[in-house]
Image 1: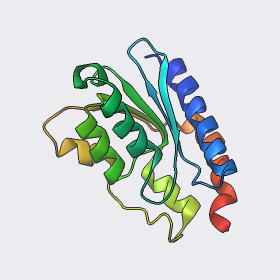
Image 2: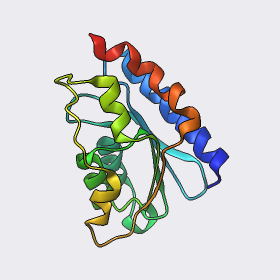
Image 3: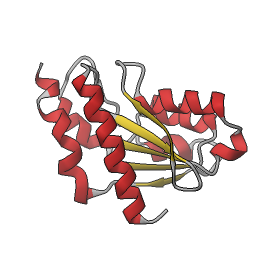
Image 4: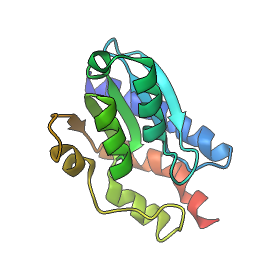
Length: 156
């Protein structure tokens, strides 16, 4: 996957995040991209424990064989939390692409009770396992774009 393709998929995930926010859900989005560079699934956040990445990984694990998922890429607007990274690991999705790192979400949400961030990177979570999941991110050139749906959402 080229950098331009990654940026295009990050923007697709951002569209999902904006749709989630429009429906009152947390403004995070993810897409699952197949080995042929086509989007297979889209998912926005649903609530505090039903994150976009966790939901999409569970759906993918139910729909596809582990060998196929190892060739897929989960693309997320923000770096997945420890729960999401763990679910992605167990689903056998072989690559993660994310737009903004976990530390940036803390700056946007503050101490909002619906998003108590953890200082635990997805790279650390994956590095604790037996499989080498490729991680690509962040992408500073679109950070401002990805922050937009968060700016007013967490002030509620």
